[in-house]
Image 1 (cartoon, rainbow, N blue to C red):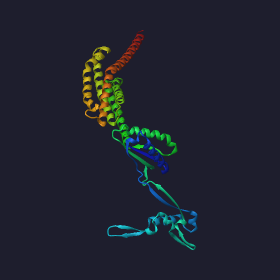
Image 2: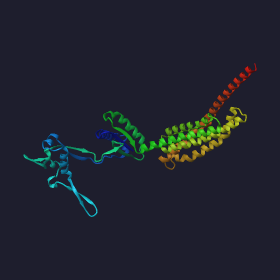
Image 3: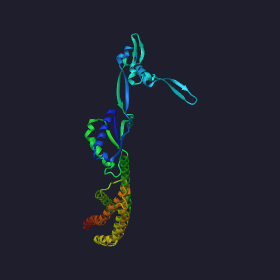
Image 4: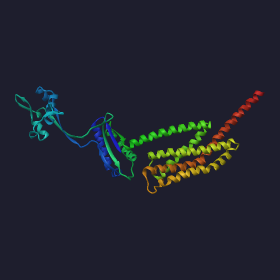
Length: 378
């Protein structure tokens, strides 16, 4: 799990990072379940900065750039040339003897100019600032960025989604203190979100393709809707199954949902097609529904039972429960059982309502044509 803090300036980013870091460490709900909780700023470094004083610099006929170059060369050395060795060029730097520069503050007493009134030391031209800064400064999409990284302990009751939810709630309470700074979440949460989005688009495209094929097959726009209502039944079973078993809805669970949809659409297609054949052969709506459900009940239940019993040990955790495959099996079993039950009871009712509306429209149309024919005869 990665929490990325972004902002236009380092101060606001660092402040927000420190507050989020401290809050997570002090949160008894989250901190015991997070391991390797660190940031990517590295070890803090002590900075010793020379800042030229314009009035003093101009008094000696110098420029700030010259003073910075002279003062900086005292600590880091000054580049004076290259030495050409047999196979490489080596930079030559002239540095102050360490015996005269044991501490950075000693550089202030080193003379850099000779004036009529005496030597001009570094401390006569600059002011000194000392502070600490991160050992590593990162940028993401053109902004300052600090990333907090943590791993969730195995078997913990929290997940990446729950941690993100809690951190977002805390951020909303303090975001006014750090204008411009924002949070973004990467790592497992980001990859899982992309996977869910990709699966959702694929699922919707598959539903549209199935509807198109069914509409061409049945020569109707309404009956494919009845068949695809089994998708809603499957989703209902998945939601209630996940809620009752208190399991996680993972990417594998989404894949299982797509699989359940295919099975129940196939069952509803077989049932509806058989009811249509009985109705076209002269049976009434009630007779077609009753006979269709009676004859197709056994193959539909056998399909459901074989799939459910095959996945039931994995869903129950026999011999042990797998967080990856167990959630997938649980989703498949609960979604398929609920969808099959609802398909057998609700889908015939939907077909009956649609056919009743169709008959009513045909009756009204016939009555209008009959009235028109009578008027024409007169």
